[in-house]
Length: 254
Ligand code: CTP
Ligand code: MG
Image (cartoon, rainbow, N blue to C red):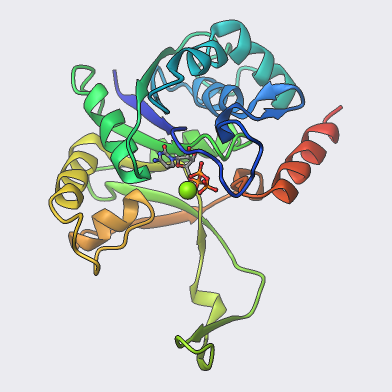
């Protein structure tokens, strides 16, 4: 098998404040996780590992049943046809495993669960980005080569950016044209991603290594990371306002 994915869903969703794990919060009546996994399956990813909170694995397993994936796919991408290798959202092998205390630990658990599959490429994706278009996922997977073993999606930033000191005083205005807001999936050769996580795990107490994404670990190893054009529909759902925006995106399809 050549392309596998780790979908992170072990967070609690504190900032969303829905009272249930964020990945299970409904969008147009279906769990966010169902969309995130369906998008991967539509993109032709054949093996998908979902990281979930250890105490509610069965609820997450219910959200990734083939019927749930097919329903989510039909809701979010109703006009999807033969453009992708797979025409149904039911053809992927989906496994749910317990995540860890941090996002990085959850991704590591997901990578470990893929050891026997030996994929060439691993995509790491947040369940909190449920409407990420399958087209972006295939573009990322195809961009991974021996020369570009780490490829991530980024979008321009609309706001003015300033670096500030601890007291809030402006140190400088940052040139916005050279900055990108980074999304997921992030795509890597399995070999590089495994090495990056081993590197990160050995440095959990190193404050200079404050990686909030997987590419950050690759960068810390001194390896190159390529940014390609992301999509606004891959935006992360963090707050209740983000959730309303995603609901509006889905309503516009109907
Ligand atoms: N995540 C994870 N394991 C953790 C923490 C986060 O798998 N220990 C996942 C989340 O489920 C989410 C992604 O990482 O899909 C991005 O994290 P974030 O948006 O911060 O989600 P939460 O941590 O759930 O939200 P919050 O920080 O508001 O609690
Ligand atoms: Mg978090």
